[in-house]
Amino acid sequence: MTTIRFHNTRTRRKEVFEPLDPKNVRMYVCGPTVYDRAHMGNARAAVSFDVAYRLLRHVYGADHVTYVRNFTDVDDKINAKAAETGRPISDITAETTQWYLDDMAALGVLEPNQMPRATQYIGQMVAMIEELIAKGHAYAAEGHVLFSVKSYPDYGRLSGRSVDDMIAGARVEVAPYKRDPMDFVLWKPSSDDLPGWDSPWGRGRPGWHIECSAMAYELLGETFDIHGGGNDLMFPHHENEIAQSCCAHPEGGFARYWLHNEMLQVEGKKMSKSLGNFFTVHDLLEQGIPGEVIRFVFLQTHYGKPMDWTAKKAEDAEKTLRKWRAMTAGVEASQPSDTAVEALADDLNTAGVVAELHRLAGAGDAAGLKATARLIGLLDDRHGAWANTESVDLSALETRMAETRAAAMESKDFSEVDRLKAVMISAGLEVRMSKAGVELVPTPQFDAAKLEGLV
Image 1 (cartoon, one colour):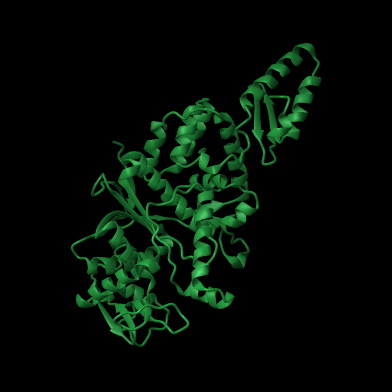
Image 2 (cartoon, rainbow, N blue to C red):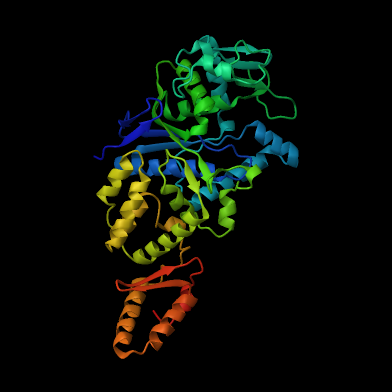
């Protein structure tokens, strides 16, 4: 069996992955807060852990992997959106949840086995909070329930921060009902105009962190294999998850391997609305950039390194994918390259897989190219026929042009070469001729219908 290695954020080293139960490999990933369109940072996390999911399925079998990714559908951002628009919260969360699913599907992201919504697990959250209070790790104060950070000695281990340093660096006003500045909210009161549920502490709603702990425990157990998310969640969200989960269920260990994807930049700058370089997945799809192209750009950078999205990368990715789709059209996929599987098993080295894809394409191994690309979610039917080359055998056209050109070199009559080239260019093909031969590269304007009569 393939040996998988992951860089475990908690231990700060690459480790051999050994699941608790190879017949039930379990992974939990923090999903979106559903109040607006998914931005590119959300998408990078989804694609990164989709690749992890695909690797686990490849190694252990699709029936032996359980992947849970949640939706946060109770949150102050959602409440603010409802107040701003006058729309019911349920309408906003239902709409934006479907937006997210549609956009991720466009990127070739497989749906997890479970996609729980926070509001479906309020009872489990209340039960976990009661357990924390009973064990002396939480306390009620003025309608709130707070977790006592100092009751958990290992707090800060994941992020590598000490509690004293965190307190010294804090610049927020400390609520008067907190016993300690670092204590965080497990439950808070709700006014009549806000979502709320009955609890032992009055009508209220959960804090953000408790939802993932409760859902992970309910769906994956007290100890599971992998927990993932963006590195912006490492502190405080994941740190707080560990504290409350390990204190509520000290017999378990919560997540054994922690994976965090790095952030995304745009044209060398941090993505932000103030810089005018903030955009959503939907924005790019509406601009005509195929989801498969977005995915391919992501996969060319290791998930643990910062990624820079540029228009040039998208343009190059589209040209490459069009070429590969033309090359593999009508070809039956064989088996993924061993080299690619080994690269992917080495902490999801997708850049290594991409390098192998280029090698396979250069060697003319279309069957291997298709199978290996599908390992990381490329060149499959899920993306549809956006490249519009499935019905066109570009290799046959390249051969025809090469033979016509060779004949013209003998006869000195290049009229047929010029005619073929003009038709190809009008159809959106870039015609590259050299001593090595002829290469046809589809551009974004490629239209197979204009090649009728040539194929």
